[in-house]
Length: 321
Image (cartoon, rainbow, N blue to C red; front, side, top):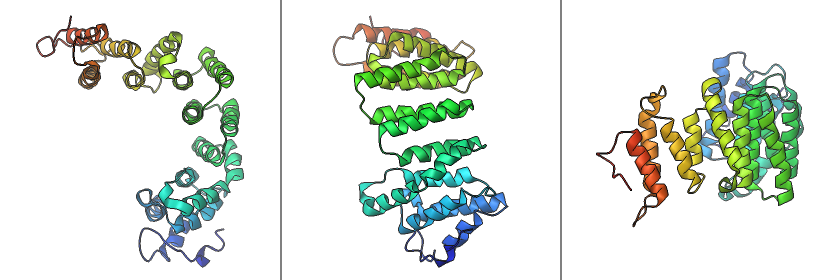
């Protein structure tokens, strides 16, 4: 295990005199003591990825980290994979050749990451998917891998997370209309299944990206409201967070309709009154953006009067008409 670790001439890290510390820290990742492993990983991260800065030692450490996640007896593999995941991301142009070499050496572990997609530990499967996707270059390759993962995954939280990967893919790749139609049918399929509302919300968020928020069909928006209300009761999604997520993505008039739902469902006398102060700040901020010089539009009247009525703010807000 870790053959050659003590022979490495460490060429640079965040701190001086790390030549002797770096191999000790990597070796301590194999410790049976969880405190030792946690302390070592944190210290290692600070030395080879200090505040996002990468070093030559980052490149040198990666092969040993990849080796560790192949060993059955190693604990906290998902934490080690988290560090590898940071290194797998595209780096700043200022990192130059160092960033390219670091990502390349992480990509050499691709066969290992794909093998870990079948691991018994869901934390490892989640990390493995992210690492494997980061190793691929084209949309088609990445989408095929995530779709294959979704076809066999059974843990709701991981399904939701994997669907979220698609949101990033669709934001960074342009697709023709035919390809969009295929993916729309695929994600609409999730809405008819007997599955967690959290998964359905994730699928709907991807559909909003595919359509482009303002072009999203009304039936999807209505389904989104329905599913986040269910999720707020039995799942993990906070419906007010979800509504607020949408407010900034639509333009008028859909933006106003979403805002009004947020206002009405957060009435201070409702069972959800713990959201009152937070929602008040959010709705006032968003509504203020809708006000422009000159005569108010019907949408502005609608929002401001709704806020004044629901929050009993007639004395502090101008009632537009």
